[in-house]
Length: 472
Image (tube, rainbow, N blue to C red; front, top):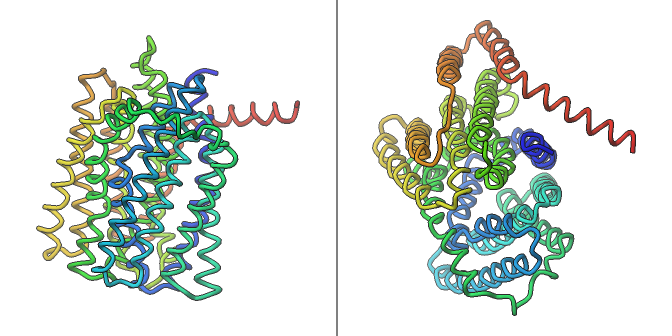
């Protein structure tokens, strides 16, 4: 199977699991915003924000190193055992240290939900590790099922705890914990991780190699946290937790776009790592990046064009101020996607230091703009600072990656996309029904025209798979 077909096939496999549960969760947004108060929604989001910061600091991002090193050792059973055993022993030690530190600090934390910072962090650590091991071993199907189980059980428990038992924020946090735990058990058993795990396979040299790759990712992870979620901390501190609930609701739409991209990015990162040194690797990477840019820019434009028609259906009236933040956050998501496309090259080359530098610079920009403007323009400061920080990082990485290889980005596509975005933005804030209908039709035509070749390839691949199944 050639590289393009393998990339599309892996993406389709990963999409089936991810997109189904994400769509269910997304369409349950009306329920969450109707049943929960803005304060409850804001508290859950804020705690999840803290967890997303703590996890990479505690793990030292070692699970990402495990994935990258397993790619190169898929045919070597002994090396796989060394990598997995060393990683799990490190994470067990990290867990013990975290629990001790938490018990010391917890005495000074006066919050009803504080123990979720212990349980949910540990569950998230090992869930992520199990999934990355599965990916590293080349089992994207198992990864997809594990991800599906996490999301599906979390959603199911949310419905039970919120609608059935009426325990609000507690219920959402408990549902997340249970979803991660079930994922850990599933991957551990079905991938027979216990066969790879042997204490005698712990290797000090492997520890050095793993940390050499992963430690530069820590400032990157913190910087990404700063850009992605420090907004919520600042908004909660200055404007209140209820306003953070509104901002969190606005973020759900751009998060949906990022989730869809991340499905592709998992296959893309693996594909670049495997083929970057091919004779025509540079041409393959450039071609795929241009196709991906057209696809995801069309998606972001389409979501903005749809929002005037679906916002009042998806979001409860008390969250109505979220409407005005969505286009800015969608534009941030598009910059984020371009960053991800380029960053796969750094990961393939195991050059994680540059990733850290550009992320740190963008994080500083985010905080300065956010704090400087939040008392002047309110919630807009959070969305604008997010966009400007992502835009800065995008420019820095696109320019820097040129020292590795020549990436041929079609300028015509960039200009066309910028014009379309401006047009959709203006129509969105005018919010006239006739104009909105015209813009939606144009966005659909634009997406089909720009991605026709990709659409045909996906249809052809799906037909081929169905024929094989019918003939077997």
